[in-house]
Length: 151
Ligand code: FES
Image (cartoon, rainbow, N blue to C red; front, side):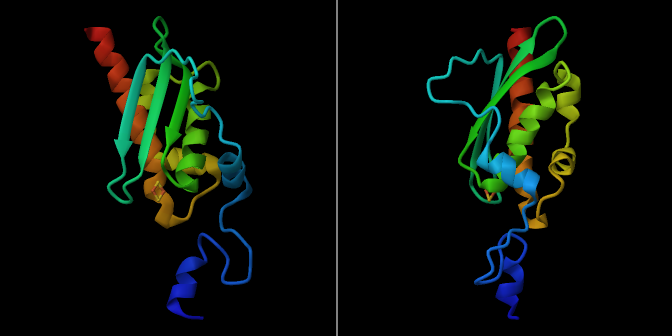
């Protein structure tokens, strides 16, 4: 097997073998992304964050709604010009920050890409930066919410 063939194995099968290294959870979130911001959706965003990946040039927008009393995230929407890994990891992130009554803003600020990857059951190493995209946009959205609160 050539070097170039070996490198392709982690995201797609070698020529002629239609296998994926993405696990079923990742594929599910890629094909059925949760909490995607729809065109013309009237989402009451308290904070938004947009970031670009220096690694690949892709872009991510994350919007959150927040309960002003509890400081918990009540809603999360996102959209991206990113890849399958970015879509799957941000979909999972949007569930993590809204489940169980919503994540506190303080906890959301400390959320790490590794936690998202763990919930997905893993991503190929070369796709780590894709999971950072949603997580950084979330942080920006939290900061945006807090800045608006102070002003
Ligand atoms: Fe750009 Fe995955 S390659 S987000």
